[in-house]
Length: 399
Image (cartoon, rainbow, N blue to C red):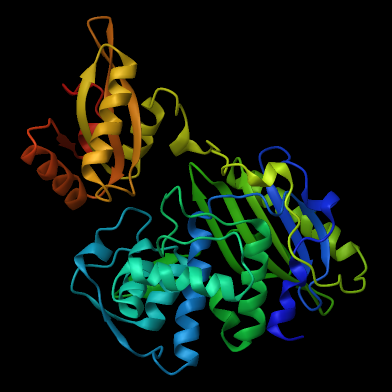
């Protein structure tokens, strides 16, 4: 089946895709050989891709390799921007020299944002230009609702996808680059003496699962694209917006089990996606996971950031929570893309029985936190960079 005919995955049965996401999640399962839709829920509904973005990052890199404009052996010198991108990072250092293959492995297996950024800079010159390449590639695959603004999946309100589009991308990776599919089944990667295991738990928990990618941000929830083979038959599943890792895994397990139990049917005729009213809205905000706990007051986010070794910046404390939120918005505006990978919040600060609210951005690297404060200091705005030990210490003055 020619790649153009993969648009068979466009959702042609409105009843399958016209509903709003059930339990905050969207899904789609297809037969990998024929493109037959086996199950679907809100498959055209916009969602934030999180680290599923790296599937498109790798697709574009493989396309460059196929065109002989790049090779797996080509060298990449990791830039400071790549090394200091917001977590999750593999742990690459500025100036470190790695191969394209190593960067691909780190991006897929460990979901390293540093590796994905390094790839983007190698191929596109800048991450912004590479993101344009990603979106153009998406259009060429029939991914009509996807837009990419970075190579990592770090939060950007303009970066969106759908379950339908992610299934198209998975199909394209399988059919266009079958010789490289093993990249997505690796259980570990070692670079410069650092070893990282896969973040894709479905590889070890589901019989027959052998590839693709997980993703998570507070805005996206827990996402997963999985491919599994049983009895000579391969199916691809997409789950977007699960509330936890365990829910994501159990949801995918149920979907794949049902798909394998269902006999393959005739191909669905080509058609354009049929969008329902629910599909036209903004992507949902799904607050889930430990790092998103207590999102309303920010306290759980502060503690989780400290445990994860992230830095934060605080712009002041206020008796009025709305004032703290306004200050956070103003700081974001002044910083622009700086600290864009961090999570903004207002956190409670109790002193002598009085609660104040701290306007903050969390989950930064040391260098990004310092750079952000220097930008604000030039404008005579208050900014204090907080290392993980300070964030996690409730007796510190800022708290």
